[in-house]
Image 1: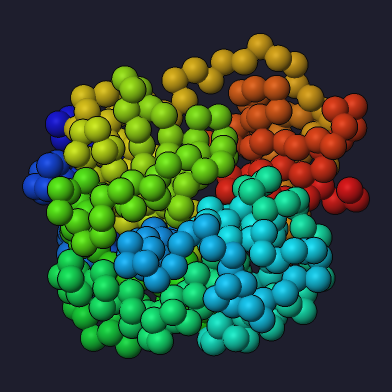
Image 2 (image 1 turned 90 degrees about the horizontal axis):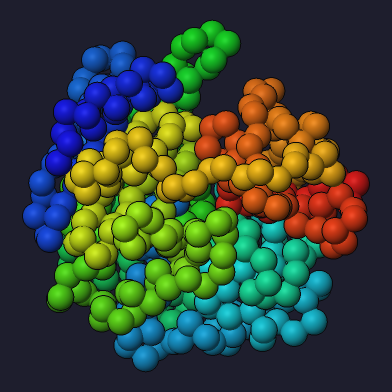
Length: 427
């Protein structure tokens, strides 16, 4: 593998993007071929990152929940095609005529039609969250399966279903059925356990104005732990990832492979399945992947099934380009250029479209402004936009945008910014 080039790229990225610490590990055909820490897990005490360092994994957790659902399907306890209301009959959205049209598959693939909602991390019981959803006035994006948009509040209902059919707390069931059998002994949902471990990262945010790192508290998350609560390390994540390519996984292969079958198109050649994304890559290869972000956490995990390759990257700062670091690790092993991107051709000769100008927002808090069809402003920082297709763009910091129109002569009513649908203000 291109080890020297990879490490130079990691160190360059850490300097440019103000990343205190990075941990990366790579396995091939079930054997660890690379594992290394860079920088510091604790800046104040100058404690170095190692492959065993525990970080937050954020939304990498989602595929664990997906695996738990597939295990229950294998056991005949449920089917991903079952209506959610078969298990949660009390869930009733006023805006949906027939709740039976929303299935477990729609929860897994973020295609229920619900947009990103205001987070309620103080809610710790699923019954409270169902009451919250039932009481919200929500303008649906569309019918189930019509649009993709991240919605953590619908995804966490998978935890409620797991509790309902197993009679166990979600985190207990997932720990007993996945973490323990795989001997992921340095992985946990429990912040109390995190405090008892040695070699744990300190989460940071980088303040661009003061050019300082600000220490963050571990988020308690509440019910959102279903999609973001595991704290782990890159070696444990390799053990987990190898389940998707081994001949003897803890869940039948056909059920695990179902998780990365394209369910809905997201951007260009990227599709979302059940808590995993799939991208068609160079030389006929497939990237099966998922990332995550929380205050003080940027994570990325995935595999290239055709090459029996698993890669995990964890960092301890918000907003780090962990996806780029992950892909660099993949490229290093495949002997591709280290900085090769998911898009082989970013050229597009179409005209810039000023109809996309405006403010876009979601109840979760995401907000962007487009001007002159050329720039995007996010949290007071402005970046260039490049068209990649008739209705698609990519931002200077590599975030894809896809615009949706009710009438091609009008302004778009929404944009899929990364993984979240944002409505145009005034539409």
